[in-house]
Image (cartoon, rainbow, N blue to C red; front, side, top):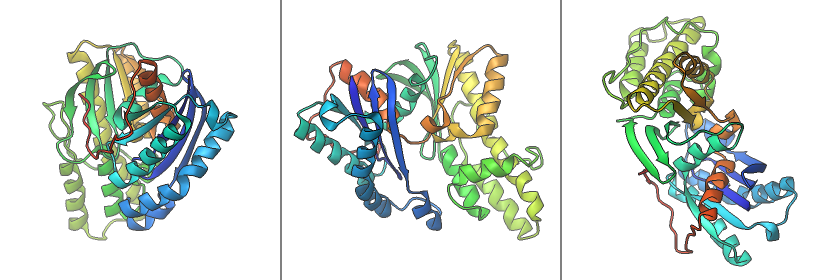
Length: 331
């Protein structure tokens, strides 16, 4: 089945074509340069940029897949969670195309899309598995019993991991997106140089606000009294605190639920330290690990098309009155 996927939940405008689980194209238009001066995503600007990019991105995806719109058999589009204005651009486009072409479309949960990315390359995970969904807006652990059947067993009580990276980068004047900059700088630092806290050690829930506050307190005490050469050590230690927490809790969730398979997905799954650490520790405990390629970790339309194809093949259809939602928990 040929499915066109559309993703516009935040600041990437993306379109992809999937044919029976195979990626034919995956086009992403990033807005990083636009939002960098503000240190984060400005919703109104994001919406306007989606309007400018949506049709060129879809056209490029179709051209790369070497198909026409008339060959598309179904459309999958993110309808939540995310920024309402951004979501509405993709959703309205999907509805228009589906109506004009007289083909079905489905609204996809963005978080389900991230999990579905693990089914797009190489060996795919057997169900059930533990999924760590970790991004700028979400940090949760799920027991995935099936698609459409999720048990939430751990979640952040405050900041998401990606948000913690971005806030740290802003405090340190490192630019946006923070996670990418910190990942790069941390490679030359000592991850044990600064003793940052690890919160909620006895729970599978997460809390990163105290970590951010700890960094802020350290910077206030020291003022500008630290050398540029110390920066890699600071960010490496900060990153290590996040990675420690994510890895330890995810592996513990797998052990406590007797599920020897873990999927790690979402934008923060692109972090090199997290990938290396969880690969090493799952191997030591004989737990199978599934992490999508980096391009499929960050927001993209291939993952939306992948989940949409599953839904369409199961006979699911969305109506033209489907609306976007800013919050949409998996359950």
